[in-house]
Figure 1 (cartoon, rainbow, N blue to C red):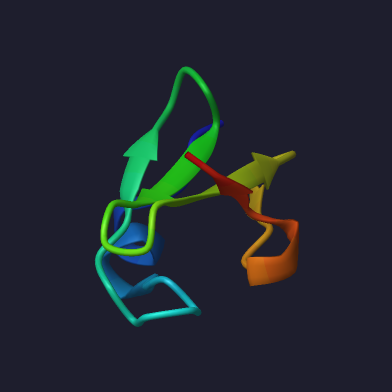
Figure 2 (figure 1 turned 90 degrees about the vertical axis):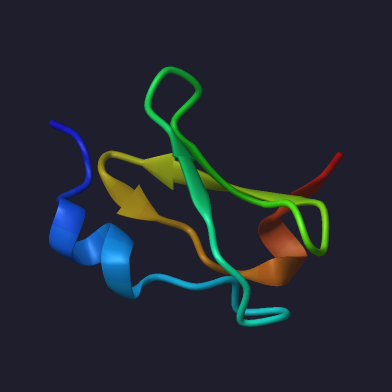
Length: 55
């Protein structure tokens, strides 16, 4: 099951409050402004900057 569109509309990057792009294949939420990828585990976004992957 994917994240709901309603949830995606309200989620922002916790580091910069920027927009996030959802990659359903990789199960990540990406912030291009601060270049962080947040994992989505079992349809739950892990929105902790210290857990995010830099790219």
